Length: 314
Image (tube, rainbow, N blue to C red; front, side):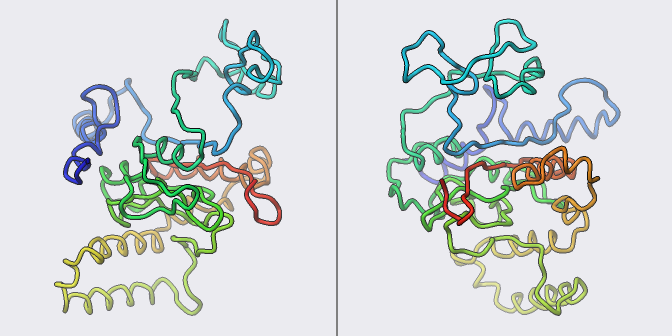
């Protein structure tokens, strides 16, 4: 059994060799202080993870296996790209023009054919043999998702460290294990502004203030709440309430931060740019992901799965 102390020590082990996430962030900060105008080296500060839940399959995108028997090889035709020797799907001609800027990794695999354990494995890096398939609702015993690990090692700011759009993975009444901070607590949950389809829950995070409450009144309420809770700090030592203060502070920063509000709004973008990305949920999510990383969000997870017009997941 992996004890929680061991789990915490391994949380930051995301990287190559001895280069862990916390050391990477510290090095980044030190370089920024020591050489604020330095040129060269890695410039990326954020990442957009496009998580294709339930497809499309890799043999129809990157690895066609044209000489394999029917049933294994792709139904589509490969096309050449700007890199000699690399072919991709005929339906991705624009990506074919940019294969000199990407790496196709064909060795990534896992042994499961079920969505539930596959999601948990790929988003947390851990195998959980105790998932109750298909009713694997997330809980605080789960290992944290990648975005929550990023949030754990990132300093607080006016924008969240991790955001999941348009919604986390889930259907048939449950949100999947592996999609939030798990045992790290709600403080490090990725921001989610919509609930999953087929899940009768409210969105965990929302920028909408209650009717009759403006930002000034919100600040007064927040101050009053802190005063009342200061009377009984012993309650905050209980496991069930630990981390609630920081969670409220995160929500408060979001509700009062113009930077965060602008990042989640597409109204500032030109008509032509919005048309170029597409006037549909996923086109607008790609544009929002761009805006979020430009605003300073470290990791944006864009979850793709097909939601029918009646709200069912296909």
